Length: 485
Ligand code: EPU
Image (cartoon, rainbow, N blue to C red; front, side, top):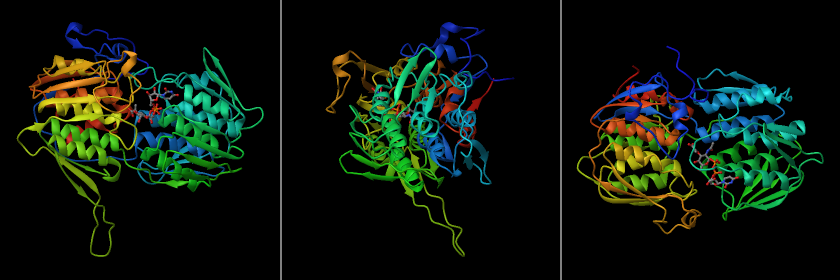
């Protein structure tokens, strides 16, 4: 059977009982991606047990691929996961004349930017709506070609996700931006020049936009209120390897000295800390025991503190390189449910070094199993709690509020967004038919189905392939009882 692509697929067709499918009213577009042949049948109630591996972070790898456009010689990136976002960026690079080939090692990609060229808007628009990464092509294409066309962006439905900071930054560098119904046309008739600029909020994408533009802009750029997520620091490492001069100060200030040319890089990216935390949450919610090879303690400290407060156990294994008589060992973190009851916690999502917004949805499923009232204040995205509705239909007891239930200053309290949740537990989850609304909420639906008693049908699971490599094979490795009908 050919599995339909959720990015191009139409609305549910031919379901026998659509009324039983739980949709997420916060993301009604989810209906567009749910198809009868894109369904995973999950027989829940079995603890996940075993060992899986995470590779390069989705939210670094895709940006590292864009950075390859800036070099005047080939770049080599290792540990690239087979996920949809990588395919989209690979396609866009190819359209712009970057030759992308598989290297000798599994997950190794080689980018040759010797013949960067313009692509037609029609060709580029094939990728419209499929990912948010295309916006990061602006700076590199302006440097290489003097102009850029960016299609309509995609990404998850977790709020309006404006790009105003990106466009403001690009204009500060001297770019002109023309918004048209088909997408954004940009040019830099007088070149790009360093600038002093403060972000209204430490946006990850806008910080990356500034970095990818400033490294080859003439003069010095000073970015204040920058995001400093580990993925950004890793991108800075890549750019530094390419010949960039970047200083990261302690107060969210990044200073970039523009250079006239950059060369290719060779880089092994940081592992995916969102995927690692997702499997950790799955272990806790199913009362299981999962070792995540590749998971790194330093990038997950905030998650690990909450995981321990909830009552989960973990053990960090440091990597040891092989040497004579010792095969060495791959580092990772083993996460498990120690038995007994879990504890309720209060947490607020925040920019790094806070609790990541992308850790929130998977962990909330585990919080439905904790005794007492847990509180979650989502301060990064205004609409990232809609998925709780589906959990309630499965037996969870989650109330969402417009108030800020926490002390972290937040942009949403006065703007009428339901961005705080109170989770009363423990609740016995029962099986249901679910439609996946977005990537991380989708994984949380999957965890809920795995934790619930009975057989659930999870529609639109292909969306999970956007950010979780081989998740079905990993589920099988962990002993989950799942099947494609
Ligand atoms: N924002 C604006 N204007 C802008 C840019 C951002 O108002 O021009 C706002 C957003 O609406 C949001 C906040 O700033 O409320 C933070 O957005 P940010 O720019 O930091 O997010 P992003 O770069 O679009 C990346 C990740 C997200 C992750 C966030 C926060 C990628 C491809 N995506 O998004 O990851 O949640 O940073 O850490 O790197 C995911 O992997 O599932 C995912 C959504």
